[in-house]
Image (cartoon, rainbow, N blue to C red; front, top):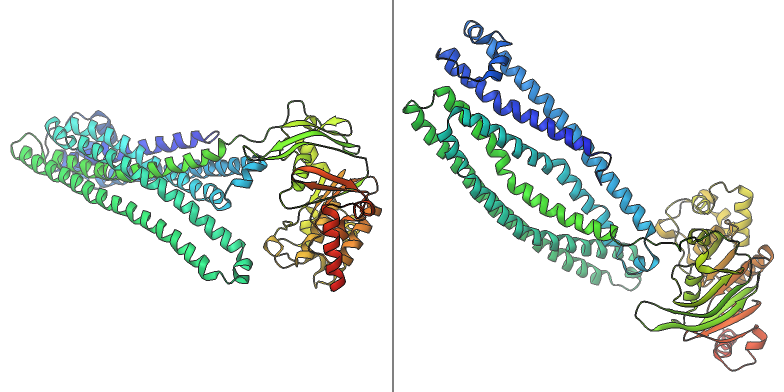
Length: 587
């Protein structure tokens, strides 16, 4: 995830090292020189690097004569620290933002390549949360907590070097608290990680409920289930809140206990330091320098708990992100090629089942001639839509053979197949854009004449022109501002713009009236004479004019024939025809 940007993180750490170096090796020791060597005129301690820096500003003698030089040295140190801090923040921001962007890009790209079956079972809200909240958690850790890790490492190292040079005994006393703080932080990390995982999963459930409720708000209103949906959301929200409180409880205990340990360390250092100064083992300047370093070291140590909790959260988020990335992407058959689909389609003893569930097809066979219009009728769950999914290779058949224009379907590139086949679903998806933008998704360089020809064929041109803004009319989210029939006609027009080699209408005329249905089918038959077309429907008037009608029952091809032939034979088709004819007569 950090490929190409790791250097920014490394430079940010180096800037943090520079900041810590000047903070702990220059600021306290310059204070010590001011108190011991300038004000009290005591012998100079052996700090070569610091003395080199002091000599840049006139040396100790110059400071004694012009005390403002000491202030200038101090301000210069502060300026250098500020430069390092600026570089650190800029670089770590670039590193974290670039990594987060790369992570989002990779997630989105991978989700597009996941198999159809994965999206059938995945929860949209949970996927959204992994692509947003989990990535943001990772970005926040990289931008904030990694610097805290660097600060803890460099400040502790620099403080240890400086403290040892001042007084070994006091250094041992100060660092005696370190193992206790680290052990306490580790125990906290182990406990809080479990809570973070449960909290993240609960947030995913909460996002799913919210997404489903908002997406299906019209259904909720229509069935008067607003109270039920609110109660469902409140329940999930309460579960999330309980885990949040549990997390805050852990943090409260940690912060209070770590504060106690850190301040106990400072007090102990100060008391022992006073004793050593009183006994002559430490100078006054050395005591001030030592305590300044100790205070500056307290913050990164105190932040250790936040780093641990941040790491636990980030680890959970990364695991959830890689659960998606580790899902195998859809792969094509090795050597699969593009192939002309204008030809006969042959199903030969095709077998298929969804996972380990019941068998859908157990040896279905038929042949569709080039340019034929085939209607498909069947009860819910009979497998009629599954036939189309197999043709698009959204699922691969388990046995038998499917050939298109003499080529085995598995040897035809999936990408080519899905670009060449136009499919319109019963519930078409329209984007929250203009009608024109939705139509242009099929072909970016579509001309106005091509667009109008497709919409006229789909009986959509008339109602579009009646809108005040015509083709520039904004379509609400998922096409909510259009009626069901209007959405289906726009979707049909969008598919026709592709000039597909094969057309599939999966119950996509169910929301239009019978007169419009007939107009669309008549226009389609004139426009696409050489294009093999499949029409799936439960409405006999939609099916009856096809070249042949397939009747699917329980995964088997129960009957085949024209409309006139099938109504003469006892079977599912005739029963539905009789029922629908009787209803039309009554109406």
